Image 1 (cartoon, rainbow, N blue to C red):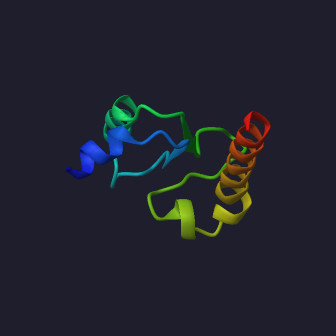
Image 2 (image 1 turned 90 degrees about the horizontal axis):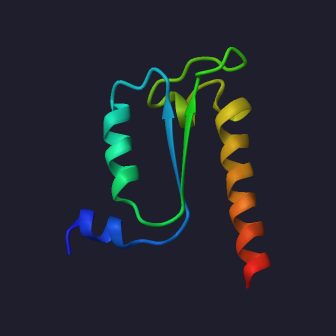
Length: 89
């Protein structure tokens, strides 16, 4: 199977993230992946509110502000997913 076929067949929760200034992966590409992914999914675009700095592609993981904004949001999402799955099983 191709990468796309394997990706579409997954059912694990998936968090798609993007920086508001990301020119490497445009929102249209993320939207196409969201449309194909059949499992539970979340999209979070960082840098859209006045409370957050702007984020480019690499800034999401290694930028100075990633530990203050991106990492906690990802941890919260993971915690919610784990809490949700443990309450179902």
